[in-house]
Length: 429
Image (cartoon, rainbow, N blue to C red; front, side, top):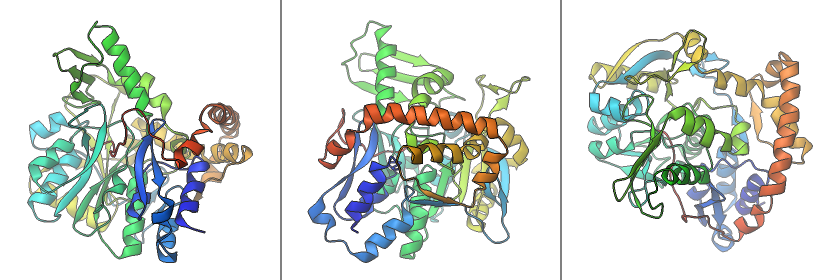
């Protein structure tokens, strides 16, 4: 079997997350297609790859397998994975904290890694300067440039496609599937990048952003065809608003709960609903929103100063956090995992529903990634009624997806493109 055949099998079974790992191999590029990042394969170029490359791909692709990361002597939490330490944290620099989506900690750590010489480049994501509604993967070497990576990008991502992403000397920032791809590939190649990740609820369809912009600008009477000079999903305060600015100065915005909860969140790709690792188990350091809860248990989105939850997953990650705190880059206080669990219920529930969702995919004739070490059957059997409802709902969702999206496989293999052309960018920073 060739890499091209294996890639097509992952895509055809709706198991592609769009992480960009494929582009680490000759003859593969990533493009936006039907709202998501997908590989486009040049069969002639890919035919020059051999058995060693195929083995690397199979060992690294998140669409083939996902393994819970249980290190010796490291506590493994059933919801949050390996944890050597947990803190509430925020960037000490007030400007960086303001720009970030929560506490700005990943931006602060990434910039400090460059300043201190612990990394020679940072691979991350930022808005496309030509079209801020699109997201682009970048590799930066200047600490000030790393600041431009601040702010979540709720958009298709392909950070693992960056040429130096899996190299020693790189500080890689990516969502959990990208962290897995880079960790696994770097192990295969004997490299040691620093990997930073974040809690992820899934990748929304790029077209959902376009629709949201259309709706917001329609209410102003402004010309929607005018180019944007700025667009951010969050940040500039916490939790921050979805905000876009047109070239004529017209500014539109809406709340986080409206933008994510109603416009973007419902459009996440099927692969994300099957994901057992939305918490970045393969990283050295993971950051997360640390919502404050209202008395009735719901997240409190009242504007305030951002605070992140910060998890050290490896001895290397623990050392980075401790040294960053000592250098005054971040401010941290200890955090109980149960407090994080209370405000991140989705990460608990997605693991509870792995079995019914995978079963639904198989009933529809799809392969699913191999998933080991997450206790999926035990969790599903503990909630039989909920599991049954998830099974029925997932079958219905896949039936709709077959009817609407299934034909895109043929055009994809022919190198089809989406509105806006190729995109190469990830999400949260």
